[in-house]
Length: 278
Length: 359
Image (tube, rainbow over the protein chains, first blue to last red):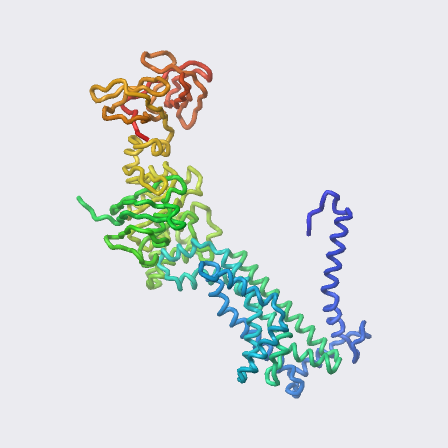
């Protein structure tokens, strides 16, 4: 919170700050809270507030996931595909982003500034345009890349997030630690493995989890690139919302929120534990 | 006996900013087996650059570095067998004390039981009990203990040459002196050759066999700490090593019997043990302890006025203003002047010690 000013913590400024903060929080949380509340409805409709609370829709979702008819609703398939895409996207981003971040942090070379700018570009680049571009590209190639066309698309938007975390962590490493390792007999690859990776692991992990969440929730690019065989969860939700307004969709949404929050908590735990150890 | 130097530097130069900055300017130096040589100079004099070039962390613009007789040009740091103790110590924060010390041995691919023994030995050498300290994290250690870990980590790899980049700069005076004595003892015990880079002349004097004084990328003077202190070849060197009284010479009055009588700008006549040619604009320099103050005129002394007096670590010190504008610093173990500021005092110079420098 901001410091009390000269007018004191009961002054008009303070009340204004408090008011704006509360309003923003309400704006951010209200829709999600509504989804959470409706998912516990006992009714058949999306009535708010729900007539009574029950777990019937969670039971329904459970059946859709593991029941004998799980194949028909495609929820399980979509969930697994989304998890797979998110995991692969994180992996691709880590493999490409970690060495690239190191190069950008430690070395000076021609075109470095350009690359730094390019990395930031997808963030301001409209996802719709990127989606169209990739769709054209994939169609033109005439090939079926299956899951990888979405993985590549997600990696393009995920990479900057990973690299930003990673570069911040690497900038925090004293270059003398690397030089000390060199004088102690470590070759460049060993310095990277023994010093840079362990010390940047917090940043890499938080970046990777961020990319995982980003990919898992991503809709726009997935919408352009999904196929009958590769049907991510976000697309599944979109179609369900278009065709049936079953509270089961809200139960699934709530579960996604839980997954996201859990991931963020994991990031905090990872960074927190490293912070105290260092 | 003629020994082959561990380190030979020949005509070494390093320029930055496309030659605009000459950090190291045609340096030659040798380090013999078992000796500590200090490179002493103010910050920015090029001493750290030399050290980084020796370690392979920087490349010279021209010149040669030989370690154990072999030119190491183009050799990466990890193949040079040169240890470096950093100013920041650079202890790996994600490793325990034991892992830090074992790092170099692990990089060499030694067997784990051998590493175990060597690490324990190295920790004992720097007086860190392996039982108590091996498992500790660097964040749990004091400055002095970190120092010891850094030392053990470097020495355990048995480098041909150890470089020290002011590793004790962050310690307080007392601990620094203590560590300097201890470091010296360990170095002599191992018979290892070392280069100690510092701007702290007291530490350098305490631990070095030889000292090189640098300024603006050049070596000004080389010799034992005592030689350089007693016979500095320039005002800069003299000032850098301690308080110096400097008087500009106006003319030479007389030269006879191996001595010269010179007259300073302020009109003082001083006899010095030097009768060679004295260049125009030369200076006569002498240290505060090479003067004697008197409370009564002993004859042939300079009369002045006491500006201030201090007592510090068993030494009395006076600033004495002479007529003509010069102020001398005098020093003695005895309180030769009971007087305070404003009173008259007389100063004589131990003329055998006063020296003439041209710049």
